[in-house]
Length: 283
Image 1 (cartoon, rainbow, N blue to C red):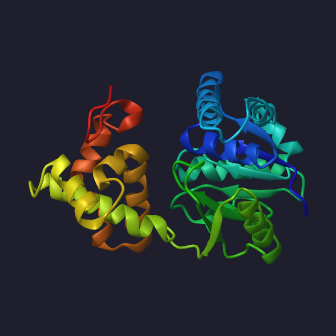
Image 2: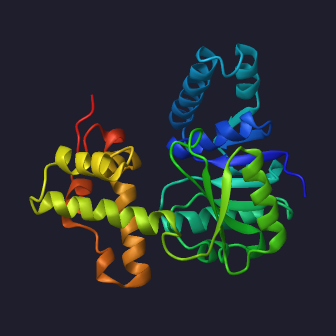
């Protein structure tokens, strides 16, 4: 099966990045979101990223225009009828994802592969909302998508070998490194990363260290490029909480209990960079 047209659902931080790398790799892209404002914001991010590449000599202005030209925007799922593959990058809400995949199953041609960029929700559960569970798969990109090389490729219980092969090949064409991962809560990346972030929040709540102190220990002592609290702000504290909830619910193990301070920040609307306030304050 040949992939020519890819629909990306969600023009946010992850979706816009996925749309960009797909268009850069030569694919026709349909970028869909629920409002013109979200799409406009996502396209501005793509333009800014590409312009930076032009200024650094990584591409010409003509190449940038060609990439932008390969991205069509839309507000309707119905345009999925033209897609060979859909990559969903909407919010981490199981009910919404199931409803979206059920709709895509009705709209998209029988050959279309349906992929989710979910960072923690079970692919098997998402696939069960469709009549093509063999063609549903996880394709978990890392943030920021244009920079990070890894893609976790997650098989649901019914995902067939052909679907996996096509998605693995696509990831390589996007200049990514695909790693096959089984369908367990949090997969590999977030099952390890999010409990570390959650423990850093516990350290803050219990007065073990300050925000800056905790991040400095992990940067200078463990050689992490970014401290866990700064990383949480980048990911979004609501997303961090949602992933911890999935881990806690999925394993029923107290070691995955979300820190009460994390929950308090989310309740206050302190979501990190996207809201201007998280563990740090952003202008």
